[in-house]
Structure formats: structure tokens, C-alpha cells
Image (cartoon, rainbow, N blue to C red; front, side):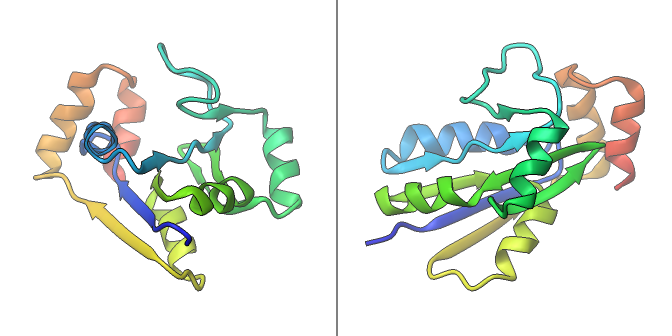
Length: 149
């Protein structure tokens, strides 16, 4: 029997990565999908574990071949989820996608047998700004761009 596809989406800084780590540690049958991205790896990120880091040309080739279940341009970088990887993982059990709201909407518009979508809101815009600044991953321009959406 096919598993359930869980989508977790939220703005950067809302705590979705922390929530994902907790879910994965407490739900042994749940696996995480690894998205493709054209952005550069952040410190500590591992190719194939955190993301599949690819060039724009590699991303575009996958997109042209129809391999992406969803894709979006986020802060100037392309991101997407491999349809073939999701299909294979769903045959093994439940899968969690940690994706942008744009990708979540694309998936929800398609007929899917078993889908649960969860969107996390920050407590307030001020708290979101505090979290983005505290995590120390983004420069001022990036923080302001993330807050403007």
C-alpha cells in the first residue's frame, strides 16, 4: 500500500526545520524527501542529505524532462522535488516534504490519493524578524527580502 505524502511549508525562520527534525526522530516510518536546489550549500549542509545541489543547467534539464512534482524560484534560486523519487519513496511508506508554499500549492492542485498539507505561521512578523537575525545565516538584504513577502 502506498504511503501518505505530508507537506510542511512555512516562511523561512518559522521553525519548520526544527519541527521536521523532531517529527523524523519521533516517527520511525516517516522519511524526508531531499529537494533539488541551485543555491550554494550553507555551512554544514551535505549534498544528497540536505539537498541535491545542482547547477541551473542541470535543474533546467530535469524540469524539461518532467521530473519535478513541484518547483519554484525562491529568492533567485530554483528548487524542486523529483517526481520519480517521491513515487519510489511512497511505495515504501510515508514521506515528508519540507517545501515552499508555491510548491505546496502545485502539489495540492494535482489529484493525489493520500495527502496532508500543513502550513506553519510565525507568531508575528516581529518574531520572524528576530528569528531570521538570530540564526545568522542571511545578510541584511536577504532578511529584508524574506520579510517583504
